[in-house]
Amino acid sequence: LKNAVIFQVALCVAHRFEMGAGAMAAGEPALKKAKVGGPAAAVWEWQDGDDWKVFGAEDTEMLEGRYKTGGGKSKFNTTEFNFNKGYGTIYEVNFERMTQQNADTKKFRNLRRIDPLGGKNALWEWWTDQEDWSAFNAEDSQMLEKAFASGMTPLETKQLSFNEGYDSLYIFDFDVMAQVNSDSGTSRKIQRTAAGGSKMFGHSKGEDDAYADVLLAAKDSDAHAGAAPGMKFKLGLDPVEVSAQKAKGAVSCRKRERDYGPIVSKDPHGRMCFDEMLKNEKEFCGEWAVFYHSYSAAALLYEVQAAVGSV
Image (cartoon, rainbow, N blue to C red; front, side):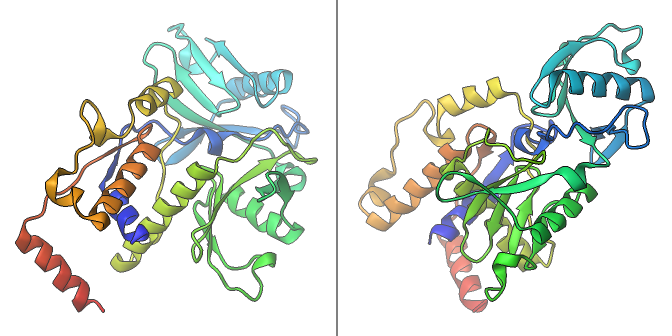
């Protein structure tokens, strides 16, 4: 029932913005061994739709210099981009979120830093039930690093050292840095850091579990359609706007009291279903809006017949 309800809500969500990839996913680690202009120089790229394009030499040198000076959590304002000559527009570059924002238009673009030494130095970790980071085994880390470097997301695999004898399908989404067990529905935060690890990020159980529910619901839907599973999240939203939407609460309850009507209110099962849907609304209301279909009796009968016919 829970999966069915979440599946219905997941199908009804519509993204509020189209502003690029997410903060958690975009947070490239501070791998600082590359040298600008050297044989192992880091490459800086910006996202144009689904494609990534390389910055010119001047912009690359400026970004890498700022990155090495301020570190992977710093941010700064600049008018020095080569494409900005003659305009003087201020851009805010945020290395923690790996975004570039036009101060006038508020438009975001995602950035990424590719370190040729990153595959050797990066450490992959997962958030444990003991609320601490634990490193993946070496062979698992190598596989994750290879997929991450290729831009493959989501990654689906059963070839994990801890999965031997279980054969569960795991989904790794590098946009939001989450790992999902498609059998159990369990979701965990993951992170990619410089060698030695980082304990800076924590784990939000409710947020992660809700993400796993939506991801798996999308996978179930795509499986029926014969398409590749996985839902592409477009994050990188303005934190102020997200916070404002969160404060307003579930979309269906804005400017009105919760009222299920006389029929649903008398039915425990009906109340449970609607409570679950509103819970999901509240969980995602910062970045998503929801829409519901209203069915006639004939339409509901058709849905039941279709469900029976698929068994």
